[in-house]
Length: 413
Figure 1 (cartoon, helix red, strand yellow):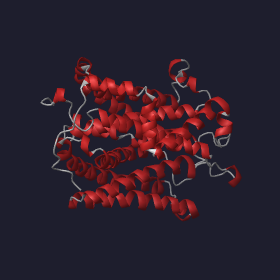
Figure 2 (cartoon, one colour):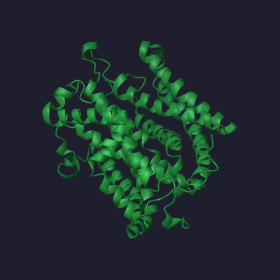
Figure 3 (spheres, helix red, strand yellow):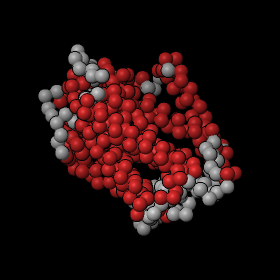
Figure 4 (cartoon, one colour):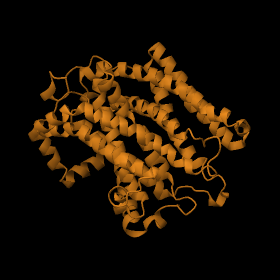
C-alpha cells in the first residue's frame, strides 16, 4: 500500500528544542511517563536490566547461560551476532545503490538504512560483552595481542572499523539536530570515501563469519558444511540487508508516518520494487549456489537423512525458493503486499540459516543430553537487545530528520 499524498512536512525541532529533549532524558518523570504508555517494552527493559546485573556482577556466565566446554557459543552468537550482522547489511547495500551506482530514488532510503545498520552493529558489539568471559578485554585482540593469522581477528577488526564508519555516517543526523552544521558539512564531504570503506569492510567480515565455521568439518552436518560457506554468507547477507530495509520501512510507515516527508513517501515504493527485483535475482542465484556442494561433493544421500534433511528442504524451499518467487511476482505485478511478505519470509530465512549453521546442525555428534539449548536468561538478553534497538530507533526517528531532509539542506542534495 502506497502512502503517497502525505500532506504537511514533518516538523524538525530547532537546536534549542533538541537540547531540551536531551535534558528531559535526565528527568525520571520522562521514564515513568514512557513506562505508563509502553508497559510491555518497559517490562522487557526492567527484566533485561536485572539479568544484566546477574550476568556481570552476581552469577557470571555459569549462572546465566547453559554454555559449557562442548557448547562455548550459544544463542548470543547465533542470533545476536550472526543474525544481527546479516540483518544490518542494509547499510552497505543501500549506500552502494544510492551513492556508488547513483540509482534514482534511493537517496531518501540512505538515512534510515544507515541508522538501522549503525544500531544493528552497535548492539552486536554490546551483545558480545555478555558472551565474553572478561568483557573489558574485548579490544585486546586488536590493540594488545594481534593474532593476525586468525579469522576471528579479521572479523573483530572489520566490525570495529565498520561500526566506526557507520557512527561517522550517522553523526550528521545528530549534529544537524543540535545545530552543529559545521561538523555535518565536514562529514558530508567524506561521504563517498566512507561509503566505499563501508562496502569493503562489509564484504570482508560478512564472508569471514562463514569462514569461522570451516574449522569444524566433523561437527557440522554435511548439508551445511562446505568450503563455499564464506561466499554463501556474503551473498545471503545482501538479501538480508535489502529485505530488512523493506521490513523496517514497512514498520516505520505504520508507526512513523507523520515524520516522513513527501519526497520519502514518493520514493518509497520505487525503492521497494528495485530491491524486490534485486532480491529475486540474488535469491535465484543463491538457490543454485546451495546445490553446488551437494552435487560437487556427492551429498545426495543426505537429502533423505531424517530431521536434518527436513530442515535443509525447509530452508531451501520455504526460505529461499518461496521468497524468490514472491519477490519476482511482487515486482512484476507491482504488488507491495507480496513484496512485504517476501521480505518478512527472507528475514526469518536468514535467522533460520544462521541457526542451522551455528546451532541446529552444529555439534551433531553430541548426545541429546549434551546438546545445547539456551537458558531463559540467555533468551531474555537477546529480547532485551532487540528492545534496546527498537527504543533507540524510535527515539532517533522521532526527533531527528531520518525520514526527511533537515531544513538546513532543504534545497541541497
